[in-house]
Image 1 (cartoon, rainbow over the protein chains, first blue to last red):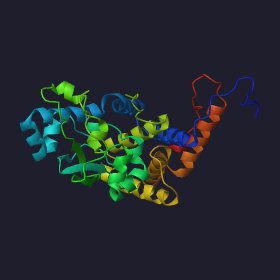
Image 2 (image 1 turned 90 degrees about the horizontal axis):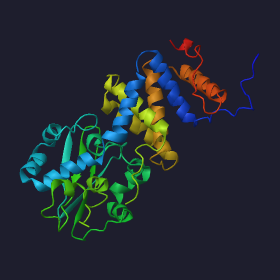
Image 3 (image 1 turned 90 degrees about the vertical axis):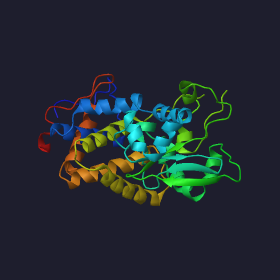
Image 4 (image 1 turned 60 degrees about the horizontal axis):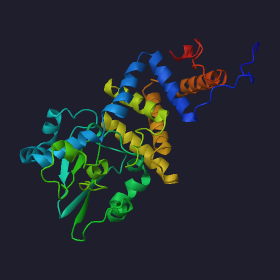
Amino acid sequence: MPHDHHDHDHPHTLLPPAPALRVKALETILTQKGLVDAAALDVIIDTYENKIGPRNGAHVVAKAWSDPAFAQALRTDADKVLSELGYYGRQGEHMVVVENTPQTHNMVVCTLCSCYPWPLLGIPPGWYKSDAYRARAVREPRAVLADFGVSLPEQTAVRVWDSTAEVRYLVLPMRPEGSEGLSEEALMDLVTRDSMIGTGLAKDRS
Amino acid sequence: MSAPEPVFEAPWHAQLFALTVHLNEAGHFAWPDWAERFSATLKRHGMAKDLNGGDDYFTAWLETLESFLAEVDMAAPETVEEMRAAWERAYLSTEHGKPVTLPKSAGDGAL
């Protein structure tokens, strides 16, 4: 080689981790074949990083708390109601809303991979995708809840729903006591992401 | 309240995610088929150790996408390896702070 690329006077750019280079390789190959458009990839990343997140789900929950007719429509045909609000699309089809009551606490897992209602909650957190959660949520849901700092009254049953590529669940948490009279906007702040997965409860009004 | 967690732990997780969603949107595969393949990979990887929801998870995702693309002749494993090596050389020969680009010749064999 006439020219040595390893010029130690100028430290080279930090090498990304091995899988990152494999992803880059796929992207380059598919782009060269005209199958992928880099700008479209940026739009997808921006959407999931900045535009879609648990605020969407919180909006739905707060609305259900404030408006009994909306809550009823949500129970009957969630897909219809959610698409009217604009919360539909990739991994948001076939939504089922499961409602927490003093008798039943609902919790969602995907034992197969990571099915999750993206349009309502965004990208799942790391723990949702871990083997630890995926295996334990079904086997010992109360222990998992305890890890999240949630303890339920003994008479409350825990029901675990296994999301799939076809059906995804959103937990409708119980409305916190003392939240009467709050606006929809203020109620939204009480709805955490975890409360809609069922590993948390809605926040008390502080 | 603590600061919100980043949506993706590493940039390559985001790139890989976007690439897969893009291919799905373009109609190259149906999402339930993807979920089936991906869960099979996760299951296989999960036999050796408890997978975390970050690098382990996306490593399984990457392997699933690579094998799918190989199967449908969209990206052959040898081509991917050549391209990966080309990117590695590009990084190692680019001065720190300068944008890393592939030499024009890279990928000529890919088409």
